[in-house]
Length: 392
Image (tube, rainbow, N blue to C red):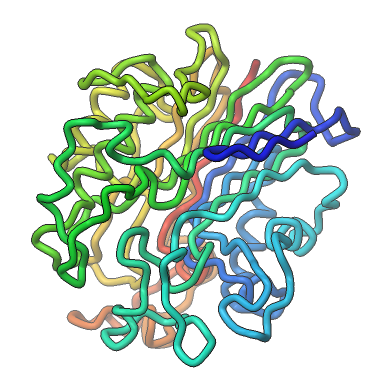
């Protein structure tokens, strides 16, 4: 059965015969796969070949993917004819049987206000195309940065939150303080989430596990001195904190039409993951929320390494911790961040690297060895997969 509500899509799936483990252990992988567009979900695409190799080496029961395009007919142009098939196609190309997996896949807010050029959406962000992008939720075309959850266990129900207004969550937010990139004021009805927030209830050996995914707005200005990004990121993470723990540092009282959105029960089993786009090592408003949240929940790793870096091999490349996994009422058996040793394994000499993997402002030693697996990861994304083996 499916209910289409103004604010959420709630889907109840009947029990189906899916792959499952009876020993109460299961593996979760989260990965922000950079700009995984429809055209890239192809066995001959170089980025996808790298993605396929890495995901098949990790093996998973539940996979959370950020930045996968929700495909719609004629988007970005007339050559594209499918609707909502990218998550299923991803599974198929990974060599997995879609009928043995449950899928939660929804179209993000990203790109909904983007504008076309001669009947087609732009696909490459440049100085010339920036004015065509969605000025509130980013993106050059609708559904560009969506989220998919793929599970070898049945999905019992799902709560997708896209239309919650920012001012409905934080009544004291002064939207007049901010400006869009083009200098315009923000609309009063701007959503809290530039992409969306999902709570997918997965049934694992007769127990309900809330699998929560959030891909937050970047805590970065992108050259706009009056950007809302820092405070919007903070409030998206406040929502996550409120949803998981029942409280945050501001009073939350949603209007009556949002009464179906409420924090999880105290005894809920949950895993919350995603690219939260704020580093615990910074002092951005969202970073402060994260540090507070981490004191009231459990992290998948005790010592968290960086999960994102620039896609070259220079010594001065920027490294950030942006991806996280939180949990409650579960036991972690093993966990990590997939990040191969750059100096062990099959050696590729720096002089033989493709130009796009070489730093622009520094020179690598020609004979410096870089591992083939590290190059593969760079080809796949600028974020790294994070994973954990949980026991009920």
